Image (cartoon, rainbow, N blue to C red; front, side, top):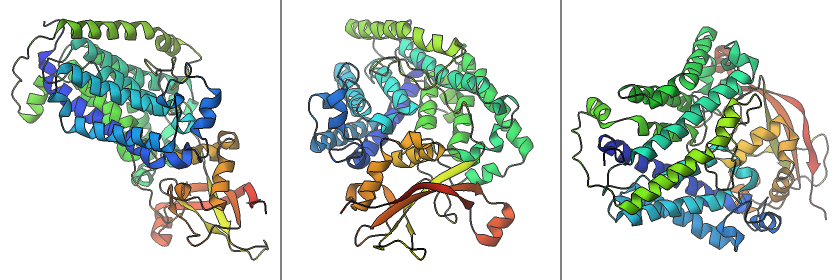
Length: 475
């Protein structure tokens, strides 16, 4: 069965599966802790309203059958518990069929959440997790050798992630071609991390080297994933290094971590032995026929569905982060085809004054991840996904991105909705909700070294314009 199983990838499969289960765990926790305010029965974009006009064939989900906040919480927390069990090795302690069922349940539960998540879940890494999770169903467990075909499908997935991102950059913003995009990106990215200020302040020649290295990592290195060993392991190592660089420089949910996990599919046990001094694993028994049939069927499915992302990649009108079917299988990926030159932030404020005057004191709401207080160093949250914070970045780019949910957000602040306030870092009205809430658009930039030493502020901000005039509840 050498053509079917790769005995030299035993450790890579073990680490890959456990790490993928960790990402599933983070995804389910993110859903469980944030859903009530975002898509719950009383949320900003309620699931029941969505399923009333979107049929199950377009968005297959358990919640098309019935929805309640209690049922959603049961699915999200159940997915988290099952993910934790897989991390602990439960899938390796049961028969092969049961292990596949565990992975299939994780995929089905998360698909059900994503397909009713609406704009809060419209991110490429949601589809990436679902596609990787689908392939993981067929990776087997400790009772059989790693299937070579599935390992190659995972390399093909990583290739599309990397090469698609590289193409969208070269075809997109001119600054990627003249190597200047990183003059701006670290400052204007959706959610900077604690080291982003320092990355932004690197010398500009080094930024150009960063950009050129990114092109090499995304447009050249991915082809080596399909080369014989040790070239494939070296390519995977280079991809891991570039992804860790991105982890250090910003907050991109689990996108970078999932790319690192997928790279393990190209690392054989010889590479692990060289790095960690581990012995090769003994051969495993041959896989049952029914399992081989399922793996072959999944491979044929992926090959057939690959027509659409391949056509998209070679198209001059390449689209990024797009699913071609409601099951999020074999998608197209890409990020930052264009880079903002300036950063704007929507700052939400409230007051408890009954009548507004020039002397009215406005107090600011603080978010966990998005920039607010100029003196607050950005925090590291990835791989956890702060969905409201991310959408606030889009709102600052254009009010059109916030058309459906920003009004409901303001209304919930005016009523002091507890679920919504839990999404925030600081509520300036702990006793009673404000009488009025407004939003203003500020221009943000990182301070210079001198400004940081003088003021202790990481950001400098200036008022740009009004985003939302003072709003109050109707009496």
